[in-house]
Amino acid sequence: MRRLPLLAIALAPLPAMAGALDQPVADPVIVPAAPAPAAPGRVLAFTLRGGVAVSPEYFGSDDYETGPDLGFTLDRLRFGPFDIGNDDPDFVSTGLGLRGSFRYIGERDADDVDGVAGLDDVDAALELGLGAGYDTRNFGVFADVRRGFGGHESFVAELGADAYFYPSERLTLRAGPRALFAEDDYAQTYFGTPGFDADGGLISAGVEVGGIYAFSENWGLDGAVTYERLLNDAADSPITEDDEQLGARLGITRRIDFRF
Image 1 (cartoon, rainbow, N blue to C red):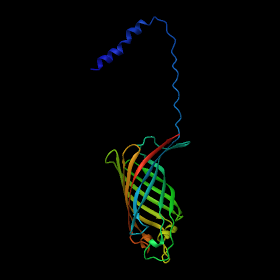
Image 2: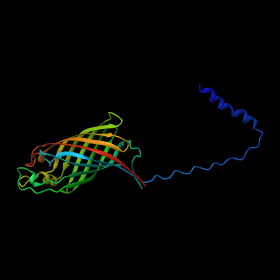
Image 3: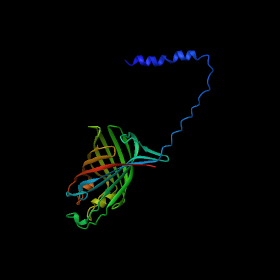
Image 4: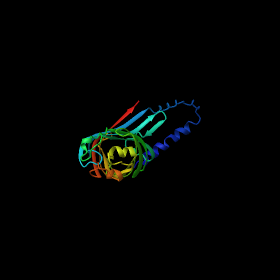
């Protein structure tokens, strides 16, 4: 039904054009060029997570405690030569890329370790580092290296992989293995005793299952459950009461976007 009006519009200029052939040609109209688009501004966008977590009282403990859970993810950085991420909050990064990595380890009181005498208190530690990852929409792998500050001052490395599932547009699930390696100083700090020298190497291996539910573009719910098994000297240490360690966390996420 829409073809007839369109055809009439297309043919209407033809008679007018024929009658205008003997008329003088008018001066051309100069249309100013559109202004060039402004250069992209600087952008910093990140996601914060805050909630609660349940974990062993210390590495190897069979007692559990509840505490705060905090997380940080860099989503977008555009500053000078750096252009990381995408302005679309639903963008899924794929391919090879760098990533930040950190972990907080709470303090350990010597009195909390039953049946082992001569232990020193261990201060809280913050591990900071970088890693590399390769992601597709359906799976990803990563390798992180961190250096400890405070309770221990050695290097640790974490390897992992995830399979991704999308039950709905708002829900993303992931599941995959994890492995933690550490230097001798780390193993001795958390698993050594006056009569037992703990060597580093492969400290633990396990699996993590987690998910993110997006309430909106800026708010979400992020949770995970972990299982790891202490191995080698970490498992043989007199400190270790249970070599099977469980953990869980649940938190609200908030995306924050600065443009300047």
